[in-house]
Amino acid sequence: MAKTTRTLDGQTGTRAAGEGGRQGWEERTLRPALEKSPERDVRFTTVSDFPIQRLGTPEDIAALNLDSDLAAPGEFPYTRGIHPTMYRGRLWTMRQFSGFGTAKLTNERYRYLLSQGQTGLSVAFDLPTLMGRDSDDPMALGEVGREGVAIDSLADMETLFSGIPLDRISTSMTINSPAAILFAMYVAVGEKQGVASEILEGTIQNDILKEYIAQKEWIYPPRPSLRIITDIMAYCAERVPRWNTISISGYHIREAGSTAIQELAFTLADGIGYVQAGIEAGMDVDAFAPRLSFFFNSHNDFFEEVCKLRAARRIWARVMRDRFHAKDERSWKLRTHVQTAGCSLTAQQPYTNIVRVTVQALAAVLGGTQSLHTNSMDETLALPTEEAVTIALRTQQILAEESGVAGTVDPLGGSYFVEDLTRRMEEGALDLIHRIDAMGGIVAAIEAGFPQREIAEAAYLYQMQIDSGEKTVVGVNKHTIPPEDDHKIPILKIDQAIEADQLTRLRALRQSRDAAAVARALEALRSSAAGSDNLMPRILDAVKAYATVGEICACMKTVFGEYRETPVL
Image (cartoon, helix red, strand yellow):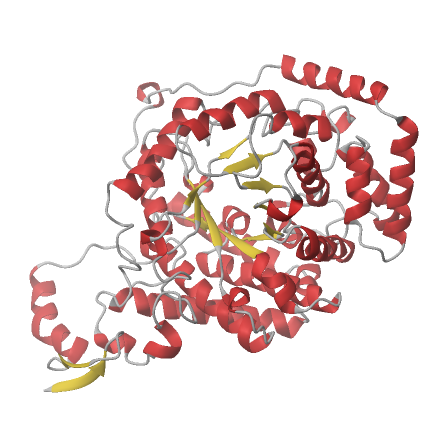
């Protein structure tokens, strides 16, 4: 018996239905085999505890509509990729996340990575900068330059990008609460290089909602934070049109312990929240939505990660077209950066991390990412050494230039298992999104502690599964070796003298700048914050006067206040 089916190119053909489908195979072939040799005594689930069925069959995709669910690459809903040729036309951007110590040291690392074939920059800031505090703030003691580069003022930003032409490189900056300030510094550096803001390319993470959910690096309460973000959207739509104003980040949600479906749902719910905020601020959706980008985690479960990215594109396309009535196709397309899972790396047997990262990177590529960071093997111990980051970059280059995976668009498309898992992840994410909608949207859900509680429960379950041995982490709870036999690798150590050097430069800046000009700029910013003017021009003026990150943040705190989290138990 045969049935007619339509293929992706619109042609018709025949396919054997099989005698009894999966059930027939189970009776005919599987049952006798299991009687002779049972399967392993484990629960077959993904990393996120999502059940994995034994065999994919045509029955699993019987409801799949090739036009509305799958289509072809570059066509709505972009399940198979947002570009018709994908990596045949252009490889993904290889963007290693990097920053440590001072701006000068990090500039040297950037130059090295670019010389080794990296195709985009990605700035890691230290904790004081992320929290909007200067290096001489008492709370910054011992943290300056430790987890990223210390940036206090435009002077530091000038050093960071010295000799790097901003008209020929795109830069991603992982910064959230102070994002407007660091972005203004980048624009100012471009001006000093003679690069018009209209041609600057890059991304600021600027995703404050996920901070309240997962990463916990905030300054202001949610609603004034959203005001700052919509001001950035409006400013860039008019003056920096090639800049991605937000990188809506599931990465940190996953690092906090969420499942893949929670990462997918909460990330897209954040995106919906930003689109709604932009519309409520008076902007046309197609004026800002094309410059929204996303940032996902790629964890250990290969197929789960591939399907997550495919489902993300499909959900977002429908949300933007059908819910927000966007007319521009660019508003429908989910563009994403992916980073391999830092939380999956192990301090034990650190060379095994190279293998983990390779699998995770392959999943990101086959899932259709536009940009990729591969973690270094030593990042569970310290910021990466030059050797470790080179191996991580070479991993991407081998995938791109030796493996053959860049030669075909969406090679896993049409797989019974992949298409069924994509559908199931989409349904699971939509269920959570609908629950958030019923609460009044993502801000209300955050204020009620809903995503925080869901993630905490998922993280606890996963840790229990590792502790019990139900989930395997090679080198940690299986295939272990005595600590004394574990190979020690060199790690990057940040010299304590770096903090003293940074404080010396900061003191010199405060003494040499025009203090009256700084005071005028900050007062103008405070006045705008208390009113309704777009904040970006005032922030840019303050930056150009060499006001510091801490001074500008403190100025806005006087109007917006500070956020205090309600504990979730």
